[in-house]
Length: 153
Image 1 (cartoon, rainbow, N blue to C red):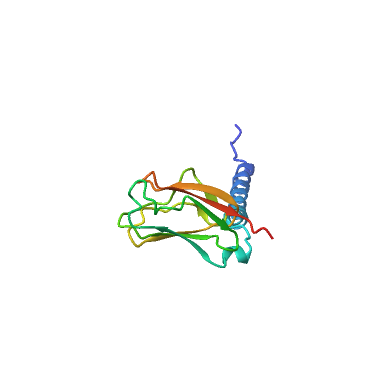
Image 2: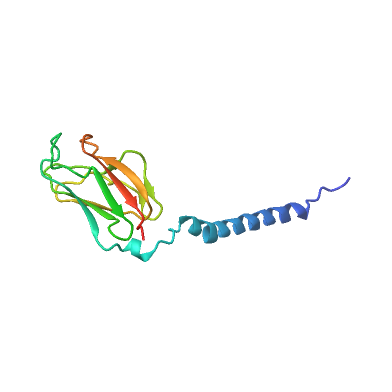
């Protein structure tokens, strides 16, 4: 009768598999993941514009057809006034919601995370040229578009 002996190759294979998976995990968490989550390099002039662009949600803006509501076509320029601030001076809560998902590679997703209560504000730093149509979710007649352009000289 021959005795059944276990092969050392099975144990060595398991150890090699564990070492390979550990090395893959270390590479993923140390090199790949940080690079994929890193923000792009952006010029300091764009990150710190000369002035803020303020859109004021005026009292009575909730009334459909109000002539005082005018953020319909805001034009901002990178490194000049690309930090946009929506200030809610109305007596009603509003939102800043993109018509379609919009994101900036540096600042992330555009749009307020919830309602802007009276006196609240929402700010967004645009770092790349784009057109972003937006609206107020509870009051869909309140619409606007932000056009972001590069400095021309």
